[in-house]
Length: 103
Image (cartoon, rainbow, N blue to C red; front, side):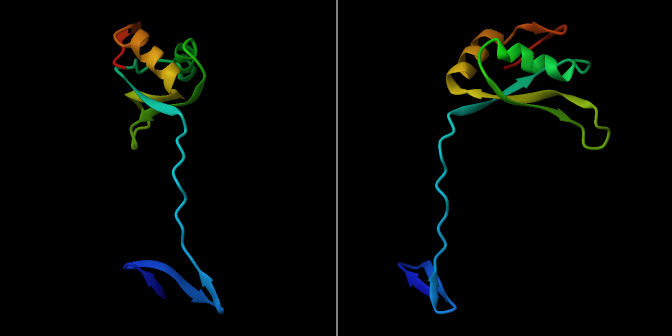
């Protein structure tokens, strides 16, 4: 193994130098928004439809109990950062399915 400044620079594999290089984390331009105090009987697509009023929704994840698989009353919505800010401003505290959202 070859070392450069104390860090692994590579290893000889079959007479060739193999080097490990970590991928750079690319800025995705999206933001994951926490949404709490969700109604347990809310239809799964309802949250996506609500947030789509403010821009493209990349993903929605509603959290469930690992054992019972019942809703836990919170989830996450992934949107572009600019759209996410608008959605947060508009929806925090808004009543949705009889409950006041915490965004």
